[in-house]
Amino acid sequence: MNPHTPMHIRPAVPADVPDILSLVNDHVRQGDLLPRTAVSIRETLDDWLVGEDEDGDIVACVSLLFYTDALAEVRSLAVADKAKGQGWGRTIVNALIAQAKLRGVPTLFALTRAVGFFQRAGFAVSTMERFPEKVWRDCHACPLLDACDETAVVLHLNAPHPMPHPSASSGQDYLNIQLSNIHVSQSKGVLPMSTSKVNKVVLAYSGGLDTSVIVPWLRENYDCEVIAFCANLGQDEAELEGLAEKAIASGASKVYIEDLRHEFAKDFLIPMMQAGAIYERQYLLGTSVARPLIAKWQVAIAEAEGADAVAHGATGKGNDQVRFELTYKALNPTLKVIAPWREWDIRSREDALAYAKKHNVPVVQTEKSIYSRDANLWHLSHEGGILEDPANEPEEIMYQWTVSPENAPDEAEVVKIDFEKGVPTAVNDVQLPPAVLIAQLNDLGAKHGVGRIDLVENRLVGMKSHGVYETPGGTILYAAHRELESLCLDRDTSHYKEQMAVRYAELVYNGKWFTSLREAMQAFVENTQESVTGWVKLKLYKGNVMVIGRYSPESLYREDFATFGQEDVYDQSDAVGFITLFGLQMKVKAMMEVSDGGQTRYAAPDYSKFKRD
Image (tube, rainbow, N blue to C red; front, side):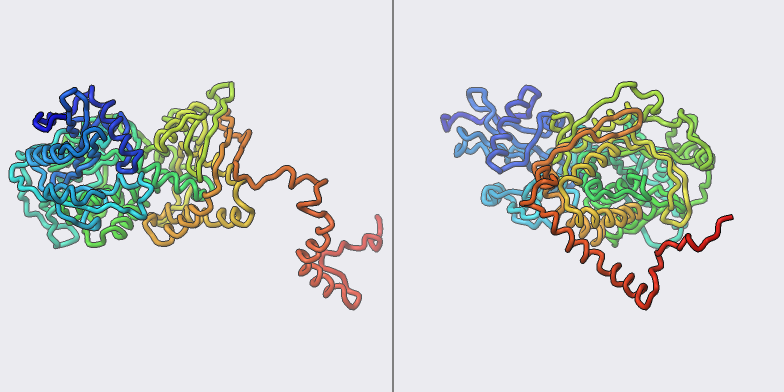
């Protein structure tokens, strides 16, 4: 390249995606970058810059990832080998800094091994601990997570006139909306249950009637700014449509919608499945395991936004209030917790609708279902209605995910699941990331009526409740994983792990995900999974999951070892001494009982002494 030829730095366009992917993958293979997919690049294309040489080739790229209005990351910086040493890296980073200033971002950061390069661009060395936990979501995919060799660098920009960030893509599903004309209530009402001042609160927001009403209630009663946060955990896409606009119309100043399906599957569902955790022998913990993840992100957003409080819409008689609040305490005990259902005088749907009307909260008038439901990637739960009497059989119309076993296909379907170190990696020989894999198993299981559970459970708060759960993919996955472990784990480890699974399930159910005990248990589980590699075949038929084959290169089952005729591994005559020692305590007790002419307590009666009628 002629050094006098100007460098062409421009925003990326859809036609650039293959070239960007190729350039990034070159650096991934060298261990310099985390992998990106064509889909993720395409969905975040507005945040990418590319460098184009005089031949029209893409020789450099970089992207800007927004975490908040106040923080963005410089990532996926890559320069083609043929263009290195010509200043493309410095030029494209300077262009990205200029773009960040235009967007009004006060702070940029990066994780890098090229510290000197970023220092020459004006960045200063920082520490990872300075950044909120939400920054590290990409690090979950990094093999060096526990021994990171990258350095955090930060650049503070002078950006007095922030521009609104465009709606981000579904790849991050990050939406940060700030409307300058939102009128913040100046009401000086009495602060309920506390006289402490709250300036800014992050609310776990679903868009339903309750959380929509909570937004103006918080502003009215706490005289504070409300930031709404919604987690996409795989619920119906219709629940997310128009959510941001609705929250803003209800009085929220900002809205975060985060696609957490990958994190949910990888860091919560798969570890829980590996532990074999099942609450009270049936419940696969779909709601229980989701709450700590939602609360974790609430805390991270609160830290990034400088909020001093978090709020949730759980009632004062259920389990969810505990799950949310234990996570808050574990991750940031300095945050004030607001639980409106324990404070306000709203006691019915009619009360909530009246409050919404009074405060101009947009509520779509729909016929209320008699059932209370919770849906995510893992399950769909049903409570209330006729289920309040556990003697009633659930109505078929209640089920929204799985077909009834009676109406399932008359032909069985075989599914093969591959595992690597306890992690499911493929379905029917197609490699899939965890969230997509679970979704595919959901479709297969639902089609065959798999995963229906009718359960009377013991709530943490002390009462019993009756619920019905649909967990099609999870049911299949648990069955396959358990079967592969039967090949790969020795007896003592397997039996101890079964005992521990009961306690693990209790921790999850009770909201104690972020505890030392659960983490210690997880370390044990991870150790047991080192050999759990192989595949399992299952047959799905009218609500049943039947194992029809399993294989592992780490299998402890050896047909030649188990064959009776082989004496080189096991000499059958050894059994005499083994049985003698194994039953010695029983023998000693019996000998004590028969001494002096007695008999053992298990001795059969002497029927000869009984007279016949």
